[in-house]
Image (tube, rainbow, N blue to C red; front, side):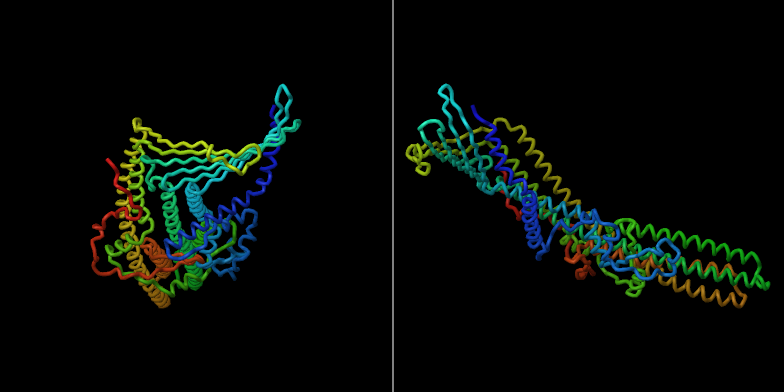
Length: 581
């Protein structure tokens, strides 16, 4: 009769301390993952960069809106054009572009998800590497036994320590040390203590014997981490450009409000002037009505512009990961600084620009190296078609009874060595997997070819957008100058009674349209420049989350080489043996 209650209680006592170790396991996983990511970043990009997922938007789950934005600077006085709007009277906080980038990095839920994706990739690597680490297992039990019919009582204690490890050659080694103690409770037989040492080894000779086959999962996990790291760095740039685009678009809409407000004020003045002239008989009533209609139209356009601005700010807050009702806006005068800087043109030959991008793009590098992975998968699948031939050996040694637990009787041990053979007679599943791997290799080649074409297309389109935006900016700048000159000349002619009120109203409407078009062209060029540098992989995101433009190389003149003749790279990174036919 075996008293399982004693055994169960013992196990619970042994496992009880582990209940408080959950935080230890999480911290241990973080240390290994962060080390893997930081080291991979240093190897890939030449410098180390701290990585963590514990500083994301989840920290704000219990915070109020005021607490979330408490460290943002106040916006200052609301401009006259926004007085009376829903923004007036709020405790506004303002961000410039550098601060907006930092806020987005800390609060964006989309950005946090991408960081966690990279974390999970490194976590998979730790699991794959664990397959080649020594494995330890320690267990045991205590049992109370009563034998019939003599009612002999025994207290049995068993403990086992097992150590096993798989080597990169495919060898599996296992060592087990067992300890058994017997305590006779109601007799004079005393106590016995016996140990047993067992070892086994297995070495494949045919299928699964090559180190590349054994390490295939580990190799792929390491490369997956590099792929996900490059994808994350690429995402950082795309996300930063999205934030910058949202910031500049909000500035553009702010300028539209400013222009519409000024136009509304000008038309109000024109309406009052027309009414005054009509009272003295110098202006017919229908021209006064025209001025009133244009004033009402300008007022409506101003109201719609303010509404669009509020919606733009809402979208911008969502992009930053802030609550929609957080009173956060852009700096009110940043567009004027952008106007003062003007635009900086980039002269680039499309073919040379595409050639430069093909050598830099991180996503294309991933696609290219996945060809190597597919080639390795073909080799692994071909190896699975082989049969199993293993050399196996085992040894078992016991200690000298009854109590010499440390004295092993090796001369009385059990030793064996043999050869296990499983011929490849049934390989349908392996055959299908091998054929799939060949198709997957062709797919990887085509994906790389498509990736090359997509990069060329993106660079060409980005360059066309940049050139078009530059031309549009120059056209709209001249258009504003002409519109301003037209307003001034019409005002002079109106004072001399050589122009009508309608002429003045039309010139003012043309001016505000031209001003809006100019700010739109300026912002479009700024965004197009960022997108071109992003697609060229010439845009960097610094460790403190600021955008930094890499040096733009000379991309003018004729292309040095034919970019269409760039060959598909081989598999030099991971040498793959020839597949046996």
